[in-house]
Length: 146
Image (cartoon, rainbow, N blue to C red; front, top):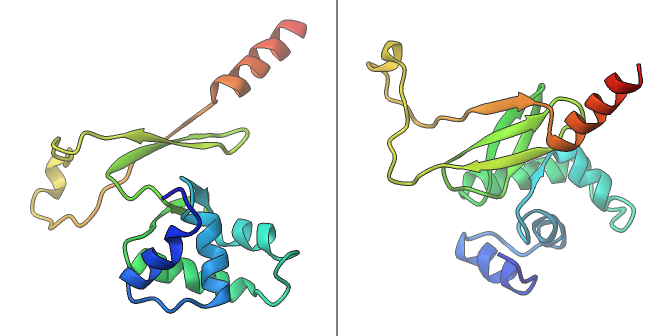
């Protein structure tokens, strides 16, 4: 989804009413690939949309998740909403908090630990953490100056 005018059609196709708040949140999170928190969305929108509440943002993101427009994962105790709903892993920088997608092969079955073979697995997500290239370079530079 890259065009703002596609969002009303997308929301209608999921039987979602076109409220101003829903359109505003959708414009931010569904118009491009994004990893967002409810608080981050609220912070970005509150100045231009003073009637928008934190609760409305959280409920709207939850509706988008329930419709399959977003997927949710936990990172450092926060719910992160991802507009990429294809199967994939994530990498997260422990210094700057950048999150990137690591594409998975659609036809590759997920690896399931032997202890879960009796389970009915509904989803699987892995998050790799470390220093991104920029933070790693900064870290290496700081070590050289010590």
